[in-house]
Length: 223
Image 1 (tube, rainbow, N blue to C red):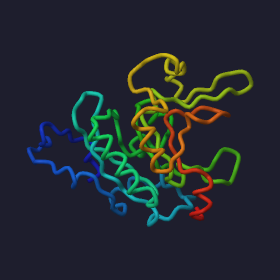
Image 2 (cartoon, rainbow, N blue to C red):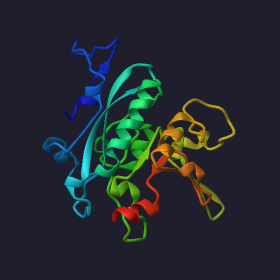
Image 3 (tube, helix red, strand yellow):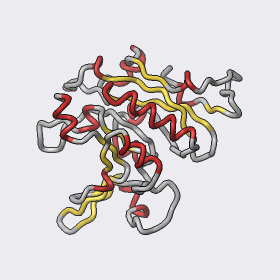
Image 4 (cartoon, one colour):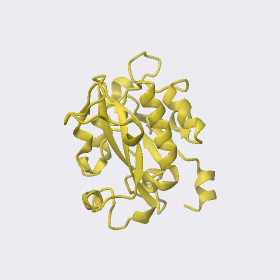
């Protein structure tokens, strides 16, 4: 299970010659023991305030930048699990390209490393800097898509902070380039339909890769 993201599908068969079943390939389940073990001390840190039972393991198919079908994995909060499966089903059906979808623990839960590798992910427990408030990714209610091409951008003391740091060529959103998320993009439209807000609409900063449940929904759910 933990290695399913490495298999590639071609013409309805995976690399082991097994026919894939579309409906069976998108599913949510409680986190298996072997995967949770790989998360401990990484994305699921010792001070994590989110119960394991409130998280879900997602198995997803996605079209890579190579045009082939890949298996993807993601951990998220159970309250958005079905929404994400619906979103990724539609993206897959429309051959929407997402380069990688690996558990962030493969990057030792280091966001910068994951983003530089253009890895799309959700849960990674952490507090918002200099606060005791858990971040949306820490709650598992935020998702980053193709982050290298859609960086986080914020002006700090007259300097432009870009995350990942290797994404400077994608800061100018007036340029046309592949995999750029815009408000009219299918991915943005689908997340909006499911009640998520997009970081590209923010004014204090821009987080073009980022989709999250709004604060009012978080308060409503008591998270």
